[in-house]
Length: 350
Picture (cartoon, rainbow, N blue to C red):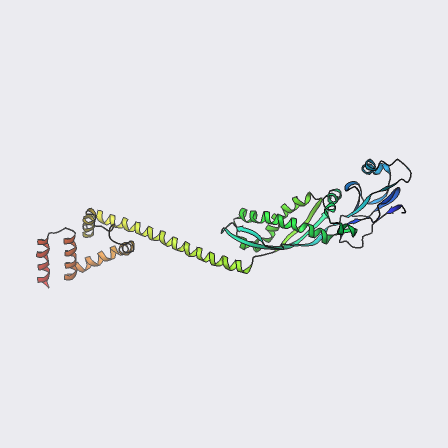
């Protein structure tokens, strides 16, 4: 097989990220031509060795120090040797797509509700460390990919989408926790969310020798059935909250009622105070026997009822006088004899 004395790659498509020179039979003195935005890397036995930037390079033993250590070829002459030459395209690929094939499970931090989220967007990358990239990526590709002689952006995209989705899964929940926001409000935070996730993506891809030049989350979707289920649960929670608030309000009203009754009992100058004081002293007050609802209803109308009775008595209403007289008897404020005498006077006056 003839030895190769000129190595060059003119890319027909910018989609190609990595291209392998078809022959491995090379000799010292051969010309290696590397175009702008390219780097050429010699690989032997799976090891990334000598790297060349843009320009025309005459291969010599002194500019192949790493390869020379493995092959031990002598100085000078056109000594043949075998090695792979990989060309790396270092231009930026900006219009790559990514998306979750299946939903990501996230717990909504605001409502503590599990949500299935799908996300889609675009990203861009550029190889900045060809040696690391070849070592990390090319060595992991299937033989079928290598047999084509190149690895395209589509293949790289396929390889890295899994990494993007993994970073998204790790950071999505953290984003909403830090902002105390709901996952259901994600569409309103796409720009901030994109920047937040991009930080994790960049740090992860850096170890592959790749720079992320752009990263965007264009859409986040939640299945309709889950949104409907969430709305139902949220509605029930709101009902429970309203009931709880009503119970607290009722308890507060009841306490205020007792405060009102105690103050009335302390006011010895009023008939209501005398009646309540006697009743509470005998343990026959509102605390026993009456329902909370009746207490609240009575408390809300204590003053109006008392005022009405006073007004009726002052106007000489015999029925009101008799009712009040009976209350005084039941409260042990007057004797039965006094009650009978006063009752007779009222009836005689009619």
